[in-house]
Length: 167
Image (cartoon, rainbow, N blue to C red; front, top):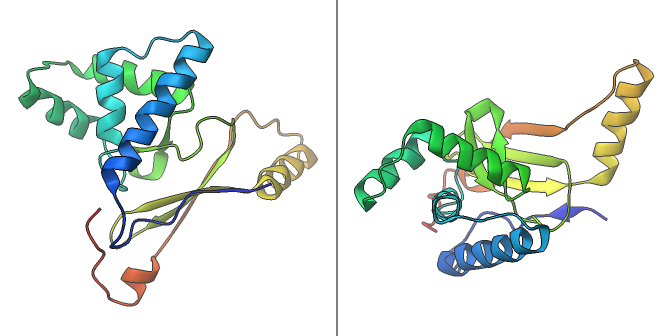
C-alpha cells in the first residue's frame, strides 16, 4: 500500500497540530527504540517541522541562536543525522535541506514532489516505484542501499499563478 502524505496545507490547515503530532510521534518512536530524543534533537525536529518547506542546517542553527541555545554547526548536523537515522526527517539532496517525515512509524523510501515556485515539498511512498527502481538496478548488477526520489516541477497553486495560503 502506498503512503501518501497530506498535500501541502490549505486555508483550513492548523499547523500547530501538525507540529504537535510530529513531536508526539517522535517521542513515542524514540522511546520504543530506546533512542534519546534530547532537548536539542527535539527542538531541531520542531524547527524542521516549522513549515512545509525544506529547512537548511544553517537555518536551523540561526533559529536556535536567538533562543538562548548556542549551538555549533556540528551539534545541529549530529541532531539532523539522528533524526534521519530514526526516520523522523528526510534530506532533500537537491536542495541540501530537510523536511519532516509524514510517516515515521514505517520504514520507507521516499518520493518527493518539489515545487520550484514556492519550494513546498510533498512526500509520498509508492512501493511499486521503490520495487521498480530496485528491480532495474538489480538487472544492471547494482545493489541499492537507499532510495530517495526527487521530482521537481510546479504545484497546482504555482502552476495556476495563485498565492499559496500561509501554513
